[in-house]
Image 1 (tube, rainbow, N blue to C red):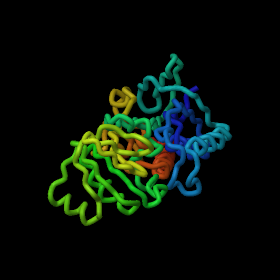
Image 2 (tube, one colour):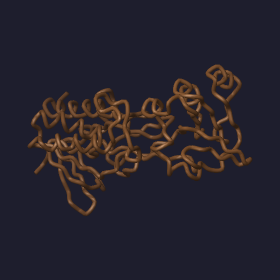
Image 3 (cartoon, rainbow, N blue to C red):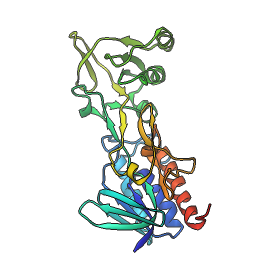
Image 4 (cartoon, rainbow, N blue to C red):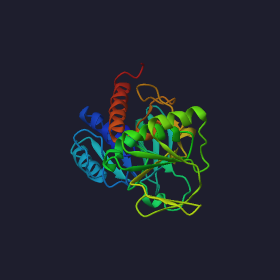
Length: 296
């Protein structure tokens, strides 16, 4: 059977795209490897109606509702390769199974590459974060550390005083100029320009000079990495952003490959659950319109 649309990725963006297409009574296949970007976090915040819920619960409930639509199929697996063209795409699933579809929606997500600081990755999603809007409120205006990984650290340093007393650890990754130092001072952000040895306790920053600065939470700037190797060979152009590589799309989430749409974190430089759901809805409806009006 040839599906109307194959969606690669069954997290927030992919589920949202599937919902639009299922409600349009189109034949849809969702292929999901089960590696949500926010799987390390115990709670998800900032998504209307779901604020404070466990991320896995949000996805599980959404999947149950999606699978109730009789035209939607689901495969738990990894898309190992994708080829073909509009009306004749082929997706090879790890293990050898192949599926064909007329359109594709790529919602495969990204990987966060973190600074190589001992103890940082183990606390990712628990006391180390990247999005103030997602996790800043729960720090209760406490002590917040920003660990610089790139020049984007200045944005964290300037934003986070709205959520607590902020210290920017430059750690050799970012050197603010005089104008930036003045901006940080005006916002009340302290500067620590020594090197970090490790992260200990909940969010304690241990410096190489022997000092330990206790924090209630930490923020850093991960680099986004697209794991799927088949995206560029398929014909989808990538673009470099200050946060890493993403798939280039237009306002309707159409990629540079006709018949292929992309949504969620893989197609935007900064994301959240709410933004991923909106992206998915746009990609799903755009894919549907392309089936109805292929000449446009």
